Length: 225
Image: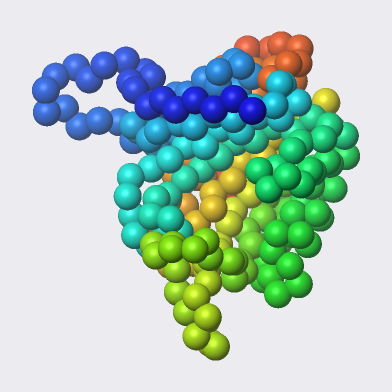
């Protein structure tokens, strides 16, 4: 498992003058050059991989106490179909495709008490066909965690999860774009996650796959995220 940490710095060029208002987004190209997307300006990037069959990029924002563990984040993961990925707790996961991933993640991560704030639905953006959903559930809290938590009806401390997913099928696997927020903080970066999804363009069939036709980077049409 490889891990690197780097800042998203001026991906579209430097600021033209001191005091100039920075842009809302940077155009980000992944380390494997398999996708591009717009991410919030100056957010940090954390990269994990297991070869090219699994990769994870996490875009990490500034301190905000309403988010669990104190910061907003987005992630872009790649899963190769039927490839086994080892989790940090020693368990493994494997998915045959996007539908299998969605079914497993809803059942194993969010459980029977989950609420679908937005049920799984097809979403097309400039010819790219995502499966999009938003799920709400009470999650466990790590020892010592203080930011973004709340007490439930019984007084138990929980992580009040409200997580958005956009899953993009590809020939050899699929991308999973995620916004893991809390109920109280979800609206803060809902638009920025929508911008990431709308701007997401695969350049290859996954990190180790064949190159795709170059993107036009035309302004995305409005979609109902």
